Amino acid sequence: MGDFGVIADVSTIIVDRLTEALRGLDPTDPPTAILSDLENRPTTATLTVFLYEIAEDPTSRNRPPVRSLPPAAPTSRKPPMALLLRYLITPWGGSQETQHQMIGRALQVFYDDAIWTGEELSGSMAGTTEALQFTLTPLTLDQKSWIWYAIQKPYRLSLNYEVRVVNLDSLDVAELRLVQSRTLTGTPVP
Image (cartoon, rainbow, N blue to C red; front, side):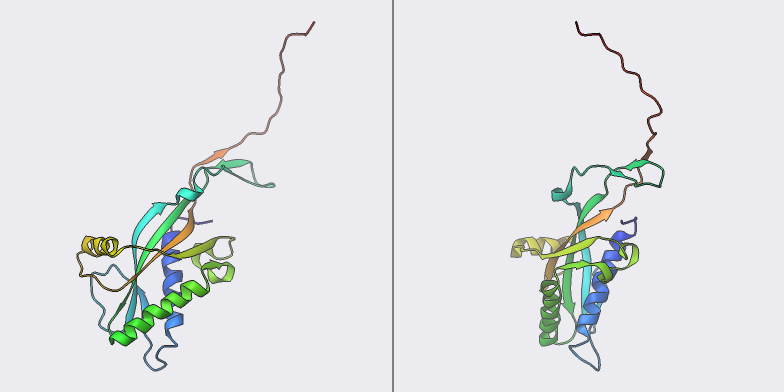
């Protein structure tokens, strides 16, 4: 399950996976992937990963409480908050051909392996049964322009990906007490 660092862990997993995939483009000076707020424009061949929105995943709402399993003390916890993370992945630096190759390689990575589980995860997600599902988000040119306008940068060719379900654990835990005794009252039926 994910603690408060799960969002940073997902971003790191994406950057590491893309950096590994980009090594094949140029064996001598491969492009890299970095986590960026797009404040500074990279000058070398770089693929930036920018988390631009976090939302609650509507498909995972209204889940039941999570109960502890024996031999632990009986507790009930609010279900994890299911998050939907939206990323903007943009190539920078190098030639136009290099930028197109970087974006093509990113598309391959997310298409060939659209669900990441098990050993592919790290940080607070390592060793869990969590799964990250990657979906290329079909945005119109106007919608993409709004994103670039919001961060006050000129429009660039980029990919928009949604990552779901990222579970953020709740801290709201209630102790459950075992039933010690019970009393039944009623009226006899004639």
